[in-house]
Image (cartoon, rainbow, N blue to C red; front, side, top):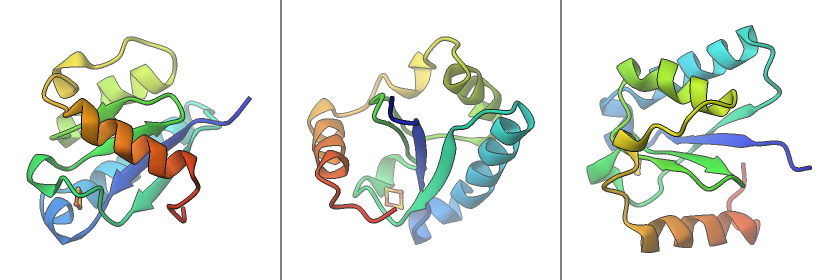
Length: 110
Ligand code: FES
């Protein structure tokens, strides 16, 4: 089984809206829960206007417009709870599938 990856974009635009702190908080909370899920930074998913963005790979969830107040719910999902649907409702499925295909092809160096 492939270990789940949680990938957070941290280029200038999403970083200015707090993505590095979100990444660190998710990482710390998963580690505290003993989760093997790896949390990685990625430069940019090409959807900065909707960011900060987070992709769970290979599971396939794309969370957009993530705020620090969403972290507990996202961690809950990663640990086996419900998907946080308020953060997935506006996701463009075409763009999400493209990003997942790029990840699948190993074209993103994580
Ligand atoms: S930095 Fe988040 S999508 Fe570009």
